[in-house]
Amino acid sequence: MPLAGKGMLLTSMDIDAADEAEFNRWYDREHLEERVAIDGFLEARRYVTHNANPKYLCLYSTSTIEVLDSPAYRAKLANPTDWSKTTMARFKNMIRAVARITISRGQGRGAVLGIVRLRPSAGSEDKLRAGLQENLHPARLDGIISMHLIESDHALSGPTTKIPAAAGAGAGDWFVLIDGTSASAVSAAIAARFSGPMPALQISSGIYDLMWDLAKSDIESDIESDIESDIPRA
Image (cartoon, rainbow, N blue to C red; front, side, top):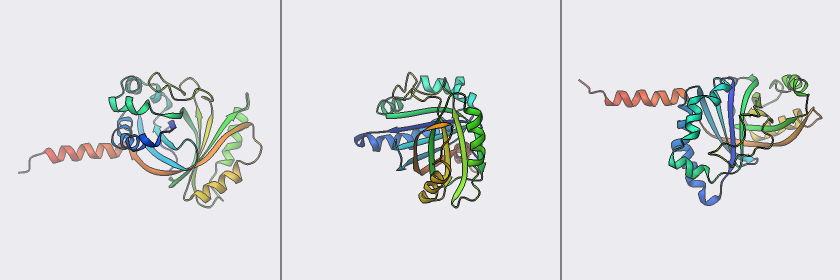
């Protein structure tokens, strides 16, 4: 199916090799579940580079972009756990984009994600969006499951007081997301659809492999299982 919801938080970062095991443990054991549990968050996906920078990427889908400026989310940003404080202080080359999902075409998701970062020319946003409506149709692209456009909100993106490592430059950039079945299919799609001129500066492109994903229903199922296990049996 197309991307869930209408809002997305994209985060991407590098981490020193000496801190990498603890970084992944934090993401996998605490951070993803903590974020997905926030009201309005729907799911999260973690990726590691296949051929992209920074090394790690995470996508959080929300019901609306307003969720990413809500009291519940801001409370989590302002009051990180001790583990979060330690880990986030080690982030390097971080990208943090709070975005609207404006185009989402196709069905399902792939094991591989292509990402193209675009910086629209001033005044060209409508023209670029209209052109991407056709470019983001996955038909006739073998191995491409779905394609999406997210447009960053300049005011909400970039660093926060607790995550100063996030870059502020390009806070209004757009990101094309390409879900595919293989790196070769995604690479071919990027070459076919994003190698020509367009009213935007292409900042970067790359390919990531899916590590794992977590949906709100997964957390709710765990809670229900825990409750059931505590009920005495007759």
